[in-house]
Length: 93
Image (tube, rainbow, N blue to C red; front, side, top):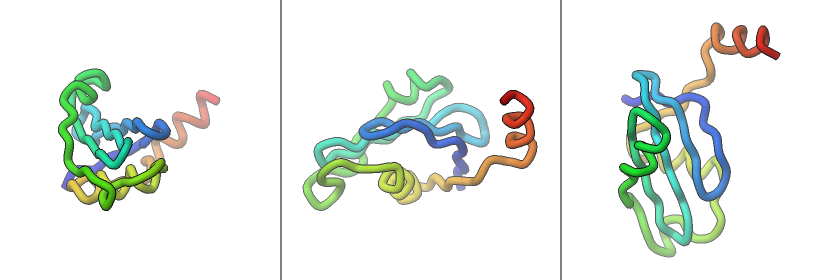
């Protein structure tokens, strides 16, 4: 299993951190869905391959839930932030 955290972005582009380091990028637009992985956000975007297409795949404007479903269907599972990450965010605020 590949765990992701901190999904961010909005239609049509999303980016998430991988637990093992690196990033996963997904894009959903005009019925096409792409996923890419890389050590930087730019590399993940550049490595994106089409994984679904057509009217029955992802027609219309997609939201964060569609991005999570797309990633889950390809072996990526969203995990809530770790307690330590939440504490660090609170200190920085």
